[in-house]
Image (cartoon, rainbow, N blue to C red; front, side, top):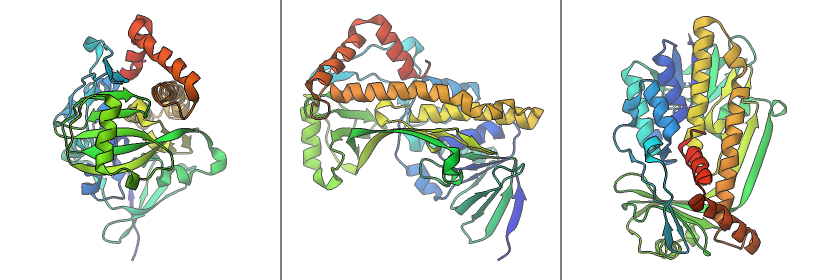
Amino acid sequence: MAETREHTAVVIVGAGVAGLTLGNFLLRNGIDCTVLEKHPRAYVEQRQRAGTIDTFGVRMFREWGLEEVLEGDPIPHREGGFYIDGQAMPIDVDDDDNDSLYCPQQTLVRNLTDVFLRDGGDLRYEAVDVALEDITGEHPVVRYQDADGTAKAIDCDVIAGCDGFHGVSRRTIPASALTEYSHAYGYSWLSVLAAVPTNPSGMAIHSLGLAGMIPRGPHASRVYLQCAVDDTPEQWPDERIWSQLEARFGTPVSTGEIIDKRIVPLRSVVFDPMSHGNLYLLGDAAHIVPPMSAKGIHLALHDTEIFARAVIRQLKEGDRSLLDSYSETCLPHIWNYQAFATWITDTMHNAGFTGYEGEFRKQVARAELQRQFTSDAANKLFSELTAGTN
């Protein structure tokens, strides 16, 4: 079958948060773009992942005229605070400066998709065998096969790799052109999606390990339980999950149907640089933060805004300076939030369970946490980082 050939300004690989946010930004600024996604639409819109849009993200969508994507299931941020050895210790965050929302990722993706398609966006699902070619040339080419088996090629000016940690975009860049910085934590999370209201809400520090219960909608919760790196979901029957959650929070918890359970390894990763030729990496394709920090969406949206402004400048004004400095602009912000993610992850886990780094680190971690309740300066910094405004 003959290959069909097209041209667009920007090809976006991946229809997740970064890809669809970028597509909407470009479309509203008169930049032609095509979004390629290997999965069917139903799969993408049901994919359960991060659930918080921090203050930075909420304000960014408003500034770009996309506040409507925040409508629907998202609920205002309610600070559940910490439970330490069964004692509730809420941290007061300045609500006047906190616009964060709990927003299930599938809700945000669905809303971004609806707006993009309504405004005439070109979004192609079930695009398989994607190959990125001539990425160091003036006009790279993206080849793929559509759902009907037709071979297609798109000539473009720029490629945005928004296809996650395991996507084709970063794998296209020669390994010799990238430096990978990574850190693996000595524990994992059992991540559970449950069809129950969130009660209690927050994170619990306990000698049995960390626990979390976070809203994912009015009748859905994401439950986290610290576990060994070699644990399997089969070792965690439903009864054990609820009993461990209640023990670690030290209070009765809502119980109900468990929809999904999986083991999530905790890791931090940064790739430098975040571009090669005319291929640019955004979001999880360029970096990973542990879920304890709740900063995955934040970093993806920050990359997206920086990249969108750079592309608009280049294609409308012929000025490549922002594109050329994309990686150097993003990386200091990424490392700032990697520092926060590492600190909050180590502190929260070490403050309870001593089997990883011992009793000394437990006492140090608890002293760190105590600052959040006794020091206005420490609380202010924590609030800024939590809100994504630091």
